[in-house]
Length: 443
Image (cartoon, rainbow, N blue to C red; front, side, top):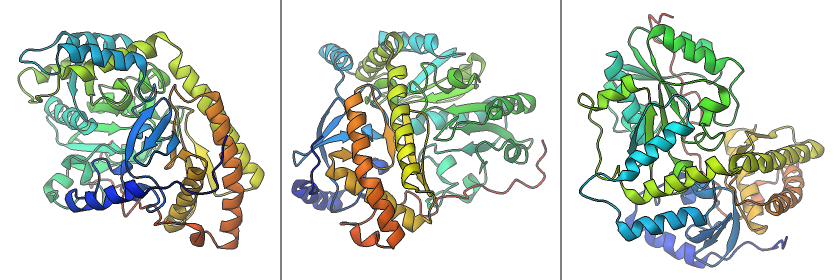
């Protein structure tokens, strides 16, 4: 691997960012892609193109990409089968005045791949379908309150639980509560007779304890609560049937996006027919672009590749090797405040330091990996396009970066080695969003 001693030149990115700030509030459409999630003044800001596991910025720099569009690119940039499907559909059209056969074909395909799926609906973004699932749960149960765990999008019912809730009425905030992942007692203490739904990411980076999801399923059944899995990350990535298949637990409703269409905008709400049937007449959930055919064609092609090739096994094997070797390197150096978590397809460096220092650590790793031609902002989102040679190059880069990181932290000199503006937190407060159990809770 050719290791550059200098950081990439980003003159055009910088000029575009100055123009961007004049016309786009928050500067980005996707927070995880925005300049605040990278080291400003050092990192590229605007992408030009991607192919395989690599991204080129507008200044012509080429990077081995581990962000991968924040997760959707399970097959990699510009996968031939997906691109061919999009081109073929484009020749016929994108959206129409009537429904398109792909709406049926993709629904049947999802049904065949995912355990327990009886009916399917489409939209464009993940929060569209998590919100639709919550509305369905409330309609089905006749109850109002929701318990959640994880990140579920920008809509009022969820974002009101965070510190970026300005504009959300207090009455809306009072209907959503959070619980602690892998802590079934925090759920038991929070449910009551008005709990309509429990929605969670079945796995983020920590795996569920052996019985946690099963106990959650049993608790929901016992109390007549709709169990919703938000599988934006786990769907079509940790198993063909997602978390339901991987962990052997069936939710009532499941929400997908990201990997299902390898980068095309599509989200899916799926689940049990007796709940989904409320969408026939009683619950309103419709959108002009829900049946947009290019995304459905991409989803059909993506799922076909996943179903017929050893995509997920290959990704996990390579990702497991990357994770295990990084953890071994961390242990050899003796960095007791750094670890790597997750299944091979998606791993994260966990930094056990106060927030400000953790952001400096993350910023330094990001900055120094750029010198190695690697684009990283916390996660290793593996795709089929990441080769064994890419993994070897990445490990070589970490072998250079981590010892220097340890020495600088030990010497108290890390901040002076950050060449730009350090990364920002997504939320000003990064934990303890959990509300206390409601008064009068019964389980």
